[in-house]
Length: 476
View 1 (cartoon, rainbow, N blue to C red):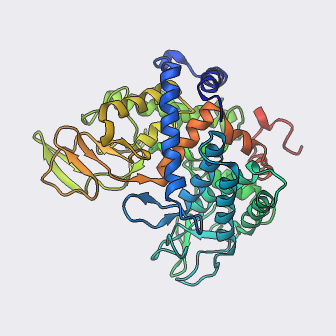
View 2: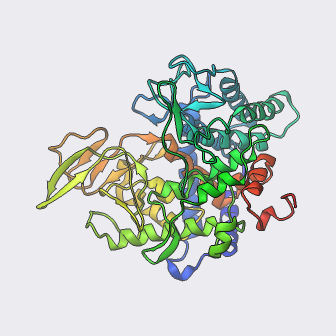
View 3: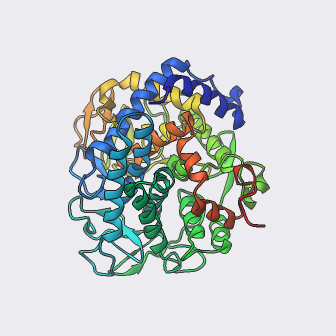
């Protein structure tokens, strides 16, 4: 097991110094021993969401729990990412993690791939967004998802880099990772070249929307450009970038996107510190700095609290896609308030989706960018709301301190008439960034592994990235 507290303190200092964080913009980092103890607890509890709840027969991870749930393929990608963290932190033996990973990859390699409306798991190498937890087949009429397939692939390629042993299990993991990745037909998914479509339905064909403009899909294009079998060229990246909107929001200038998950997901795997594509070279920053600025802007928005929601402060903040209390308009303290259930909450220069619901994953996924504000936020959430919010698997998905009415039925969770609404569920796609980005902050584990993955490196090079750790790795 790692010497966790000592490593955390040393690497925190190195990361904060090396990434240009301006300490004058926020409070100093929290006390290292106290923060390290909290992060130990948070990582271990969050890990067990993936380890305890995943179906051991096929490797499928539930989208949510404890509510009955289908599997989310993106949650599987986060689970595959969490297993090496569990090994390095001593939660599970390496052999156990490797066997679980092999089971998962075997399932995805052998599951049926065809255009049938039911009974299949994917098509053209992509997979359906949600799968039945037992059969592994398409859940109801969900889409074949290009982004969720990408998040799954990111976890698979991480495992390819981590399990480097010569034994049969780890050798099979590496081979299956290539097989699954090489099969994905990115060219087929270019319904309107050179961009990649968001998805496809067997009933009606491609979704009429493409991945253009900044959001969580940077990882998708890195994977698509890096493919040795169906690789896209730089025109796809250029089309993606053509939709960027640069602007200044709450004192921070960055590429705008409202929900924080769009600033976090791709960074779970790819270390964007010090590497730049043509767009970021033109702005004089990198994508890591871009996400750091977005994090600070969200915190500044919570401090300003223009909609006067309860509980927002310098230490309680974070808007992203998450569960919510109800789809209802409620009069509270003489003011009409509109609330939502699951919603892509977020704020930027160009939009504002804010109903007073906060999600711990927004701050948790930002720990690597801005630990000096993200860790105190997580600590404050736990200490303020206790077991209402922090329980068996770490943070429950969301809470709303404004929603104190008990006269309106909520979709899930419970309402405390003083503290507000609290979700009952944990969500896999929100648990994943918490454990992964805390680990990247503390040890750089995932970033270090992916920096050595030839497929990801090739994709970044084809997108025009250079500098930093990519120096000398791209062909002339």
